Amino acid sequence: MSQLASDWLNLLVVLPPADRAEIAQRLIESLDEAANPEWEKAWQVELQNRAERMKNGAIQGIPFDEVMATLRKKYS
Image (cartoon, rainbow, N blue to C red; front, side, top):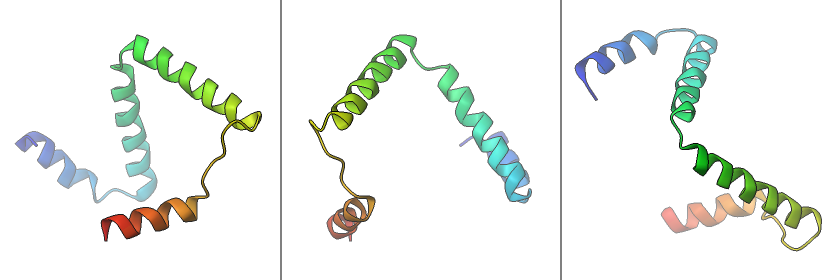
């Protein structure tokens, strides 16, 4: 991290949570704007395909608690 970024971070972390959340959201959105449009389109197609397969029962989701338990076991 550059010194400038570090200086900004030190100033920003003392802001109220709502302000920090808004800043974080805008920073994330600025990264999204730089994304490759072709990749974005491909992800949208993939997400639509996955949603359709979930709706018609071709695939099933895994409950969050089960996923987290598996990850904790694997990485603990």
